[in-house]
Image 1: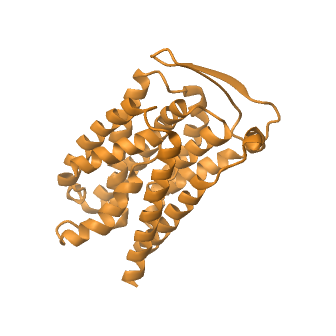
Image 2: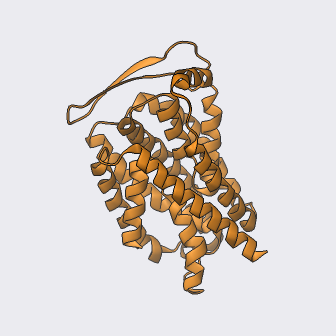
Image 3: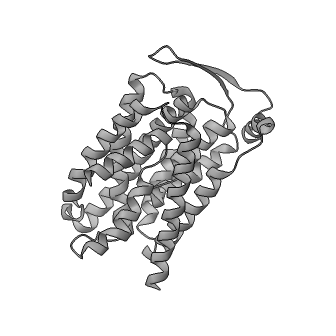
Length: 286
Protein backbone atom coordinates (compact mmCIF):
# COMPACT_ATOMS: atom_id res chain seq x y z
CA UNK A 1 0.00 0.00 0.00
CA UNK A 2 2.83 2.45 0.67
CA UNK A 3 4.28 2.55 -2.89
CA UNK A 4 0.75 2.63 -4.34
CA UNK A 5 -0.13 5.52 -2.01
CA UNK A 6 2.99 7.43 -3.08
CA UNK A 7 2.00 7.04 -6.74
CA UNK A 8 -1.61 8.10 -6.13
CA UNK A 9 -0.65 11.16 -4.07
CA UNK A 10 1.95 12.26 -6.63
CA UNK A 11 -0.58 12.02 -9.47
CA UNK A 12 -3.34 13.74 -7.49
CA UNK A 13 -1.04 16.57 -6.42
CA UNK A 14 0.16 17.21 -9.96
CA UNK A 15 -3.40 17.30 -11.27
CA UNK A 16 -4.94 19.11 -8.30
CA UNK A 17 -7.65 16.41 -8.07
CA UNK A 18 -8.81 14.09 -5.31
CA UNK A 19 -6.68 10.98 -4.92
CA UNK A 20 -9.53 9.16 -3.20
CA UNK A 21 -10.91 8.37 -6.65
CA UNK A 22 -8.04 5.94 -7.13
CA UNK A 23 -8.21 4.45 -3.64
CA UNK A 24 -11.92 3.59 -3.68
CA UNK A 25 -11.73 0.96 -6.47
CA UNK A 26 -8.80 -0.69 -4.70
CA UNK A 27 -10.69 -0.90 -1.42
CA UNK A 28 -14.01 -2.00 -2.92
CA UNK A 29 -12.94 -4.21 -5.86
CA UNK A 30 -9.46 -5.64 -5.17
CA UNK A 31 -9.37 -5.99 -1.37
CA UNK A 32 -12.26 -8.52 -1.20
CA UNK A 33 -10.46 -10.64 -3.83
CA UNK A 34 -7.47 -10.98 -1.48
CA UNK A 35 -9.60 -12.65 1.18
CA UNK A 36 -12.38 -11.89 3.69
CA UNK A 37 -9.89 -10.52 6.24
CA UNK A 38 -8.94 -7.72 3.78
CA UNK A 39 -12.47 -6.56 2.94
CA UNK A 40 -13.63 -3.31 4.53
CA UNK A 41 -17.05 -2.99 6.18
CA UNK A 42 -18.60 -1.46 3.04
CA UNK A 43 -18.33 1.37 0.50
CA UNK A 44 -19.03 4.01 3.15
CA UNK A 45 -16.06 2.80 5.21
CA UNK A 46 -13.93 2.75 2.05
CA UNK A 47 -14.94 6.34 1.27
CA UNK A 48 -14.16 7.48 4.83
CA UNK A 49 -10.71 5.85 4.87
CA UNK A 50 -9.92 7.15 1.38
CA UNK A 51 -10.81 10.69 2.48
CA UNK A 52 -8.80 10.34 5.71
CA UNK A 53 -5.75 9.16 3.75
CA UNK A 54 -6.22 11.87 1.17
CA UNK A 55 -6.32 14.54 3.88
CA UNK A 56 -2.75 13.77 4.92
CA UNK A 57 -1.55 13.61 1.31
CA UNK A 58 -3.03 16.97 0.38
CA UNK A 59 -1.84 18.54 3.63
CA UNK A 60 1.68 17.45 2.68
CA UNK A 61 1.24 18.86 -0.82
CA UNK A 62 -0.18 22.10 0.58
CA UNK A 63 2.95 22.64 2.68
CA UNK A 64 5.05 22.16 -0.45
CA UNK A 65 2.98 24.65 -2.46
CA UNK A 66 3.03 27.18 0.38
CA UNK A 67 6.81 26.99 0.41
CA UNK A 68 6.82 27.69 -3.32
CA UNK A 69 4.36 30.61 -2.76
CA UNK A 70 1.95 29.43 -5.45
CA UNK A 71 -1.30 29.45 -3.43
CA UNK A 72 -3.78 32.24 -4.19
CA UNK A 73 -5.76 32.55 -0.92
CA UNK A 74 -8.11 35.26 -2.15
CA UNK A 75 -9.21 33.20 -5.14
CA UNK A 76 -9.63 30.09 -2.96
CA UNK A 77 -11.88 31.74 -0.35
CA UNK A 78 -15.28 31.56 -2.15
CA UNK A 79 -14.68 27.93 -3.12
CA UNK A 80 -13.86 27.02 0.49
CA UNK A 81 -16.90 28.82 1.91
CA UNK A 82 -19.20 26.80 -0.38
CA UNK A 83 -17.30 23.49 -0.53
CA UNK A 84 -16.86 22.71 3.18
CA UNK A 85 -20.50 22.80 4.41
CA UNK A 86 -21.82 20.90 1.37
CA UNK A 87 -19.11 18.22 1.82
CA UNK A 88 -20.06 17.72 5.47
CA UNK A 89 -23.74 17.34 4.50
CA UNK A 90 -22.76 14.76 1.89
CA UNK A 91 -20.68 12.83 4.43
CA UNK A 92 -23.63 12.63 6.83
CA UNK A 93 -26.01 11.43 4.12
CA UNK A 94 -23.62 8.78 2.76
CA UNK A 95 -24.29 6.62 5.85
CA UNK A 96 -27.98 6.52 4.93
CA UNK A 97 -27.43 5.50 1.30
CA UNK A 98 -27.70 1.95 -0.07
CA UNK A 99 -24.18 0.47 -0.60
CA UNK A 100 -25.04 -0.92 -4.05
CA UNK A 101 -26.42 2.43 -5.18
CA UNK A 102 -23.27 4.15 -3.92
CA UNK A 103 -21.11 1.86 -6.05
CA UNK A 104 -23.36 2.36 -9.07
CA UNK A 105 -23.40 6.14 -8.85
CA UNK A 106 -19.67 6.19 -8.14
CA UNK A 107 -19.07 4.40 -11.46
CA UNK A 108 -21.37 6.84 -13.25
CA UNK A 109 -19.60 9.77 -11.60
CA UNK A 110 -16.20 8.61 -12.84
CA UNK A 111 -17.44 8.37 -16.43
CA UNK A 112 -19.11 11.79 -16.20
CA UNK A 113 -15.93 13.37 -14.84
CA UNK A 114 -13.92 11.78 -17.65
CA UNK A 115 -16.27 13.34 -20.24
CA UNK A 116 -16.13 16.63 -18.34
CA UNK A 117 -12.32 16.69 -18.56
CA UNK A 118 -12.39 15.83 -22.27
CA UNK A 119 -14.66 18.73 -23.13
CA UNK A 120 -12.64 21.51 -24.71
CA UNK A 121 -14.23 24.97 -24.94
CA UNK A 122 -13.29 27.14 -27.92
CA UNK A 123 -10.41 29.50 -27.27
CA UNK A 124 -12.32 32.62 -28.32
CA UNK A 125 -15.14 31.74 -25.91
CA UNK A 126 -12.97 31.25 -22.81
CA UNK A 127 -13.68 34.63 -21.24
CA UNK A 128 -17.27 34.64 -22.47
CA UNK A 129 -17.88 31.38 -20.60
CA UNK A 130 -16.09 32.73 -17.55
CA UNK A 131 -18.14 35.91 -17.48
CA UNK A 132 -21.37 34.00 -18.14
CA UNK A 133 -20.69 31.76 -15.15
CA UNK A 134 -19.89 34.72 -12.98
CA UNK A 135 -22.82 36.84 -14.07
CA UNK A 136 -20.30 39.67 -14.33
CA UNK A 137 -19.73 41.54 -17.62
CA UNK A 138 -16.39 42.90 -16.46
CA UNK A 139 -13.14 41.13 -17.30
CA UNK A 140 -12.52 40.40 -13.65
CA UNK A 141 -10.12 41.26 -10.86
CA UNK A 142 -6.46 41.22 -11.81
CA UNK A 143 -4.30 38.85 -9.76
CA UNK A 144 -0.53 38.54 -9.55
CA UNK A 145 1.35 35.68 -7.90
CA UNK A 146 5.13 35.75 -7.55
CA UNK A 147 6.56 32.28 -6.85
CA UNK A 148 9.59 31.61 -4.70
CA UNK A 149 11.73 30.91 -7.79
CA UNK A 150 10.87 34.33 -9.20
CA UNK A 151 8.23 33.19 -11.70
CA UNK A 152 5.43 35.74 -12.13
CA UNK A 153 1.85 34.70 -12.92
CA UNK A 154 -0.66 37.35 -14.06
CA UNK A 155 -4.32 36.56 -14.63
CA UNK A 156 -7.87 37.76 -14.04
CA UNK A 157 -10.35 36.11 -11.71
CA UNK A 158 -14.06 36.85 -11.95
CA UNK A 159 -16.72 36.19 -9.34
CA UNK A 160 -18.06 32.68 -8.94
CA UNK A 161 -21.65 33.63 -9.63
CA UNK A 162 -23.52 30.61 -10.98
CA UNK A 163 -20.26 28.64 -10.65
CA UNK A 164 -21.01 28.50 -6.92
CA UNK A 165 -23.73 25.93 -7.63
CA UNK A 166 -21.21 23.74 -9.45
CA UNK A 167 -18.80 24.07 -6.53
CA UNK A 168 -21.55 23.17 -4.06
CA UNK A 169 -22.42 20.05 -6.04
CA UNK A 170 -18.73 19.11 -6.15
CA UNK A 171 -18.42 19.51 -2.39
CA UNK A 172 -21.57 17.49 -1.73
CA UNK A 173 -20.42 14.63 -4.00
CA UNK A 174 -17.02 14.67 -2.30
CA UNK A 175 -18.59 14.08 1.10
CA UNK A 176 -20.96 11.49 -0.36
CA UNK A 177 -18.55 9.58 -2.64
CA UNK A 178 -15.06 11.01 -1.92
CA UNK A 179 -14.43 12.77 -5.24
CA UNK A 180 -15.71 15.87 -6.99
CA UNK A 181 -14.46 19.09 -5.42
CA UNK A 182 -10.94 18.95 -6.89
CA UNK A 183 -12.17 18.18 -10.40
CA UNK A 184 -14.80 20.93 -10.29
CA UNK A 185 -12.41 23.53 -8.88
CA UNK A 186 -9.56 22.76 -11.30
CA UNK A 187 -11.91 22.93 -14.28
CA UNK A 188 -13.21 26.34 -13.25
CA UNK A 189 -9.78 27.76 -12.40
CA UNK A 190 -8.06 26.60 -15.60
CA UNK A 191 -10.76 26.63 -18.25
CA UNK A 192 -13.11 29.35 -17.06
CA UNK A 193 -10.87 31.70 -15.12
CA UNK A 194 -7.67 30.97 -17.11
CA UNK A 195 -5.50 30.68 -14.00
CA UNK A 196 -1.99 29.32 -14.83
CA UNK A 197 -1.71 25.58 -14.09
CA UNK A 198 0.90 25.83 -11.26
CA UNK A 199 -1.20 28.42 -9.38
CA UNK A 200 -4.46 26.61 -10.16
CA UNK A 201 -3.09 23.28 -8.88
CA UNK A 202 -1.71 24.89 -5.69
CA UNK A 203 -4.94 26.79 -5.01
CA UNK A 204 -7.03 23.70 -5.74
CA UNK A 205 -4.93 21.70 -3.25
CA UNK A 206 -5.73 24.25 -0.52
CA UNK A 207 -9.47 24.04 -1.28
CA UNK A 208 -9.49 20.23 -1.48
CA UNK A 209 -7.43 19.86 1.72
CA UNK A 210 -9.80 21.89 3.88
CA UNK A 211 -12.91 20.34 2.29
CA UNK A 212 -11.88 16.68 2.65
CA UNK A 213 -10.47 17.31 6.13
CA UNK A 214 -13.94 18.15 7.45
CA UNK A 215 -15.63 15.44 5.35
CA UNK A 216 -13.20 12.72 6.52
CA UNK A 217 -13.58 13.86 10.14
CA UNK A 218 -17.35 13.41 9.77
CA UNK A 219 -16.94 9.95 8.22
CA UNK A 220 -14.48 8.71 10.86
CA UNK A 221 -16.66 9.97 13.72
CA UNK A 222 -19.63 8.11 12.23
CA UNK A 223 -17.61 4.90 11.89
CA UNK A 224 -16.42 5.12 15.51
CA UNK A 225 -19.92 5.90 16.81
CA UNK A 226 -21.32 2.83 15.03
CA UNK A 227 -18.53 0.28 15.63
CA UNK A 228 -16.05 1.78 18.07
CA UNK A 229 -12.37 2.48 17.42
CA UNK A 230 -12.01 -0.99 15.91
CA UNK A 231 -14.23 0.04 12.99
CA UNK A 232 -11.35 2.11 11.61
CA UNK A 233 -8.77 -0.14 9.83
CA UNK A 234 -5.69 1.31 11.52
CA UNK A 235 -3.51 -1.47 10.06
CA UNK A 236 -4.33 -0.02 6.62
CA UNK A 237 -3.96 3.70 7.25
CA UNK A 238 -0.61 3.20 9.02
CA UNK A 239 0.81 2.51 5.53
CA UNK A 240 -1.37 4.69 3.30
CA UNK A 241 -0.85 7.88 5.33
CA UNK A 242 3.00 7.88 5.23
CA UNK A 243 2.77 7.01 1.53
CA UNK A 244 0.57 9.95 0.60
CA UNK A 245 2.67 12.33 2.72
CA UNK A 246 5.72 11.35 0.67
CA UNK A 247 3.77 11.48 -2.60
CA UNK A 248 2.45 14.94 -1.77
CA UNK A 249 6.00 16.28 -1.51
CA UNK A 250 7.08 14.56 -4.73
CA UNK A 251 4.09 15.98 -6.62
CA UNK A 252 4.86 19.58 -5.65
CA UNK A 253 8.50 19.13 -6.68
CA UNK A 254 7.46 17.80 -10.10
CA UNK A 255 4.88 20.54 -10.73
CA UNK A 256 5.65 22.08 -14.11
CA UNK A 257 7.72 19.10 -15.30
CA UNK A 258 4.68 17.28 -16.72
CA UNK A 259 2.44 19.07 -19.23
CA UNK A 260 -1.14 19.68 -18.15
CA UNK A 261 -2.46 18.04 -21.36
CA UNK A 262 -0.64 14.78 -20.62
CA UNK A 263 -1.88 14.87 -17.04
CA UNK A 264 -5.47 15.39 -18.21
CA UNK A 265 -5.25 12.48 -20.65
CA UNK A 266 -3.81 10.16 -18.00
CA UNK A 267 -6.52 11.16 -15.49
CA UNK A 268 -9.28 10.63 -18.09
CA UNK A 269 -8.00 7.10 -18.82
CA UNK A 270 -7.89 6.27 -15.09
CA UNK A 271 -11.41 7.62 -14.51
CA UNK A 272 -12.83 5.63 -17.45
CA UNK A 273 -11.22 2.41 -16.19
CA UNK A 274 -12.50 3.05 -12.66
CA UNK A 275 -16.01 3.81 -13.89
CA UNK A 276 -16.21 0.67 -16.03
CA UNK A 277 -14.75 -1.50 -13.26
CA UNK A 278 -17.20 -0.19 -10.67
CA UNK A 279 -20.17 -0.70 -12.97
CA UNK A 280 -18.98 -4.25 -13.68
CA UNK A 281 -18.80 -5.02 -9.93
CA UNK A 282 -22.36 -3.75 -9.44
CA UNK A 283 -23.65 -5.85 -12.36
CA UNK A 284 -21.88 -8.94 -11.00
CA UNK A 285 -23.64 -8.51 -7.65
CA UNK A 286 -27.13 -8.28 -9.14
